[in-house]
Length: 91
Image 1 (cartoon, one colour):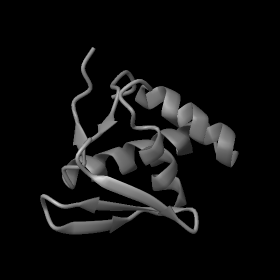
Image 2 (cartoon, rainbow, N blue to C red; image 1 turned 120 degrees about the horizontal axis):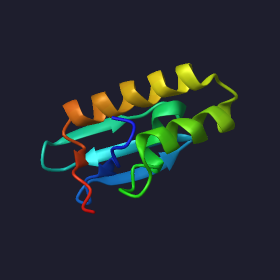
Image 3 (cartoon, rainbow, N blue to C red; image 1 turned 30 degrees about the horizontal axis):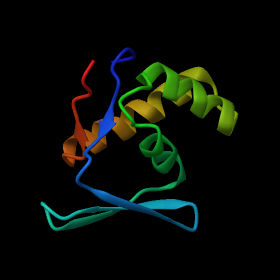
């Protein structure tokens, strides 16, 4: 997963409210509130950054260990995928 380049679906809306991201998925008629860590990951799901790069950035921003950052990013991405919020990035 470290080399994957996660990308948010382009048809979902998102706004930052008090440091947390609120994602509106109109197709599923759902609203998701992301915590600060998930918001950080979501913001970087642009199809250009790898999972490893996002984890490295998370570690630098929050002062966590590489293992903890990898675990947090993987968990967030897994949840985004379960919710159908990601699309495949094109090379």
